[in-house]
Length: 418
Ligand code: ADP
Ligand code: MG
Image (cartoon, rainbow, N blue to C red; front, side, top):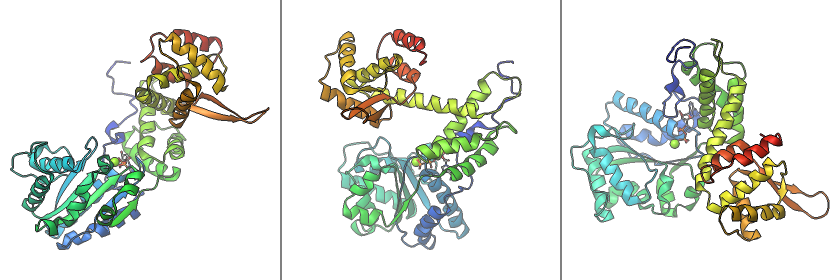
């Protein structure tokens, strides 16, 4: 097949499976969107709306629902000839209220260069420098900009948990009318993946920000099937989906996290395998491709997780990989520690004591890299550990840190575990 041949492709429009693709109307979130709509509706009459706090695990449609909702709201505002503006900010990497305020101001002042899809405000003012002003001054500047924008403004703060306890802005914005004597109707929408953030909000912030709270539950398998089918219809060429593929992606994602993001990712990667794999001119996505996609995602996750591990975390993982290659897992802490001492010395590191090493076993278990097995057979009660990821993936990841792991692979092949 010619390299750029466009026949026999699996994807008709691959963008539709991308995470940032915005569905026209968002299915499966009617109840949540109704609640949000009732909070914001007063804006259409020029009244003060309720503030909203949207929370739930990652990938459950919080951002997508907000985008769909705001689009509907702007249409409704245009219908009744109400001037309504939106400023959106994703707070990833932003750690203080001060930075949120500066970024909001500059989001409104950068004109066409808006970095956020929902932002409509565009002011002819010079951007603010990132530092060097008292916080009160920046807040005042922000509110004056809201006023310049027309006074009826929705502020969307996505992934707001990154500001932690530095949450003044969430208190100040809702009561800006009083504090700064400024004529604005402000609708604040905070979005968070982090349940602790919500619990730890100071009571005064909770009162003002969380006037209406909307919890986005994880999707179940049936919902994910319906979500995927819609996207697959537009994304894939006709007839390329083998039966059972969508239900399998949905089931895997539902079991793990209930995340639509994960389900879409499985389908997209499975499609990649189908499109790029050997084919006899009849490319089809099969359940086998989905299983490979899952392994691929898992491998990527381990590799990413590995970057976060400490040196000793990596040494402990390497030790368990050795044992796994030898067919000796699950293995008890005591034996793992003996091997770990040898491995550490060979790699030029001072080994930790058994208890400290055990902490790493626990961490790796929490991260899903290892599994702990309680062995209550025989006398005593032992914890045993084995890999919870493919040995192959673990070795791939470890090769970033350790020079030559061919010996481990060879051992594994000899023992038929690879
Ligand atoms: P969150 O903000 O909760 O982490 P997102 O809104 O970014 O999750 O959703 C993750 C991905 O799943 C996006 O690509 C989004 O379009 C898609 N998605 C989520 N919910 C739905 C749904 N109900 N219908 C269609 N696509 C959805
Ligand atoms: Mg989001």
